[in-house]
Length: 414
Ligand code: CA
Figure: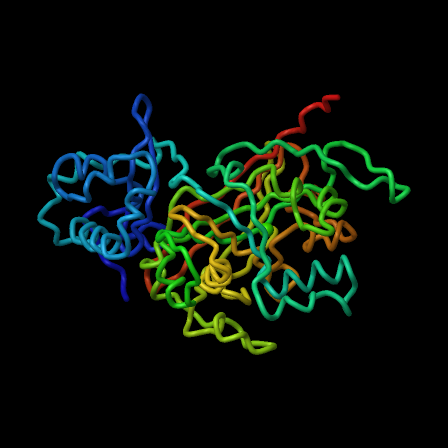
């Protein structure tokens, strides 16, 4: 599909992330106003609260809230309806330009908020390259992959309460870490605080029983960039036998625009060749990954950013649809606003690794930044920024930025 030209000039620029082909959903405010729903078009935001309040569209008042959950709950027919309507209103030959112009806000004047209320958060471990790298470091190359890994997407239940929107500062966690004598731990600020480059799938349809992979695919409303901040020293001490807990509880940052599954439709790609056949309920039924170029930037306090990793979402072993199908397979109820983290996205190339743990190989090979600074893990004052886009012919589907600055740890209270 080519670029859909708009009467908003900035939406036609080849390097904007927000052409009419995209139309991602977010929540914005301007000084003195309440947060309200909007869609990004070029360098503008169209106020969808006002669009519905003015009677130009009618989605039963679901565009009047402060998050997208009520609209998502209307289901896929309404999702397609709003998308088609917005596309018609914003395309070059639209007769509605004069009515819509007053509803546009320059993005530069807006503050972006959490786009949806996160009802639950689950995080997976579904990149073969990442799992092999981490497993090799922790258990050696012979035991890198646990025996279950090639048969199901491994996950854990995280905390919805710690999910924050891009721009929110992140305080370095305190936690128990293993002492030098390997037994007596100490309680201290994490010294191995890390990022994880992920894509988050937003569930838009509630379910109460096992979903097929195809049903799961259709229940996903859209995707966000996701940084699953991780304290490796806390993780190493706590993770056996029940998995991550406090190491992953500090914060998870998401990008402010939900890029819809519909916008990503032209970019679907197959999962990689299977190393072992999947059981029928998780088997591939078609292309369910996406070709999304991803990068990670690190900027020390007051200094220029260095891009430390570039990879692609197509490198994943399991799709979000397979993760959701597995998640629901026991009968686990899924809710509108459920957030599923893909797991760290790493590619085969050493520069395509989605965490500092891998990039610095456990701290043994520190990175040298463009500024001359070196990093094994994140230092106080560093800002980490994830970016992503799907590249079409003459246009791109952008996610915006997923950014967070790390602040010093709180003092220890006893
Ligand atoms: Ca993770």
